[in-house]
Structure formats: structure tokens, C-alpha cells
Image (cartoon, rainbow, N blue to C red; front, top):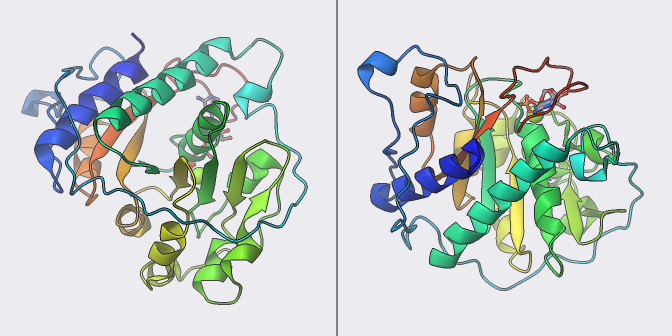
Length: 294
Ligand SMILES: Nc1ncnc2c1ncn2[C@@H]1O[C@H](COP(=O)(O)OP(=O)(O)O)[C@@H](O)[C@H]1O
Ligand SMILES: [Mg+2]
């Protein structure tokens, strides 16, 4: 079992017992605080009986967004691992498949579709995980996935797809465009994408104005919705975004982020923690060009 696999299942258990105010069972003892999270000390108390509560993972209504606008993408195969045929990323690809399997297992117990990807600190790999997870999910035949860039202050998800940044979510939330203008379809079959749009310093206001909720409600026909977000370090945007999602996938950079910070991060969300992705297990550099371990 991979560390990601174990983490996701553990967190599902926590979601079950925690309701809308999750207090995950893998939280550290006081002695563990200040210790960076590693593959070894990531707690792994899998609970096979775990289920998500109805309240914390509501069913999505059946509806859909208007036709998308058919833009061209030039996906970046050095960062979208499933497109990379050098064989360098086989192990990392397998980890993303494991996360996908665990999400399906959780979903068998309780329906949910909207996943917020977040982290305690900047540059832990949220965007990397969002893009590759969405790609892993959409590779399953007949499954439609919507990938949303919710990092309105520093949108970068479009660079993975080689897509345009605007018009996007910030423009829609500011009521400058309608939903059909921001949804892109490109060269990855069954994957739709909403870019971040023009960078906004007003992100918290925009995300709280009710239009996001409306937009995601109109996306009921997607099998999965993956929402990227800013880190929790400086702004509350991720916490606001979680209100419109069903659960949170927390990205933790191995050997760098302290257990204390992860513990605090988990309390920032109104929705359950679905799992933890321990990223850069081999301590790779931040440029993403060498070793990859998700
Ligand atoms: N596991 C990984 N292997 C290789 N590169 C990675 C990995 N995780 C992240 N990166 C790279 O590190 C950089 C920062 O990651 P990113 O996802 O943008 O961080 P965040 O969104 O959390 O700020 C990006 O260039 C990304 O491609
Ligand atoms: Mg990012």
C-alpha cells in the first residue's frame, strides 16, 4: 500500500466520525508536533468501516453547464505525468492511480464529487496534484471531469494544460462573463477546465458572493470536480472554497511541512478531509523537472 493510499483511507475514517468539524484520528501526539511529516511518521490508522456523513458530503443535483467553447490546449507533458512517455514517472503515475482508487472506495460508501485540493504552505504541490489527479480520474472510460482553478490570486493551472488563463473564474465571479464563456474543452477527452481568470486581490470577496456555489451546482453532470486553491498560509480563500465542495484533499510536502501546521490546516475547513497526499517523498527540488514522487 502506498503512503498516499493509506493516507486517503485514514482520512475517510476521520471524516466519518468528525461530521462537519473534522478532527482526524491521525492527528499527532504533542511530542510529534514540530516534527516534519515524513512517510514514516504519517499516521496510518485505517478504518475499514469508515463512511462519510450525509451532511458533510451532499449529493449533487443533476444539471449541467452550457456548451463549452472548444479552445486549443498544448498540455505540458513534463508536468502532466500521464502524457509523459519517457517512463520516468511510472511510480508517480501509480500513486495517482492509488489516490483515484481510494476516492472511488470512499464514494461507494457515500456520494460526493467536488474535491478541494489544498495545503498549509505555498508550493507544496497543490496545482501539480490537482492537474494530475483530474487527469487520472478522466482516464477512466466514460467519466467526465471538471478541473477548476480556484487560486484567483495566482492562477497557474492553465500552464499545465497549455490553456488560456482568461476569461476564467474571477471574471465570472465579478459578473463580467457568463458560465458558458469560462468553460474550456481541449485535447484531453472528457476533461473540462475553468481557468482562474484575471488575477484578483479581491479573491475572498469574489468567492463569497454566491456565484461560485451557483456555478458548481450547475455542474452536476460531471463525475468529478477538482478545485485547486491557494495555500492556507496567508489567505482564507481555500477555507471559503471548501464551503462549495464536498471534501478536501490535503497536499503535504514530505519532510518539510510540520505536523503542527498540518494539524492546524485541517481545522480550517468546514468539510471533511478526504485524504492526504504526501508529496515529494524523495525531497525533489521545486522545479519539478527531476524526480517525481506524489
Ligand atoms: N511531486 C512533484 N514532482 C515534481 N515536481 C513537482 C512535484 N510537486 C510539485 N512539483 C512542481 O513544483 C512546483 C510547485 O508546485 P505547485 O503545484 O505549483 O505548488 P502549489 O500549487 O502548492 O503552490 C511546480 O513547478 C510543480 O510542477
Ligand atoms: Mg498552485
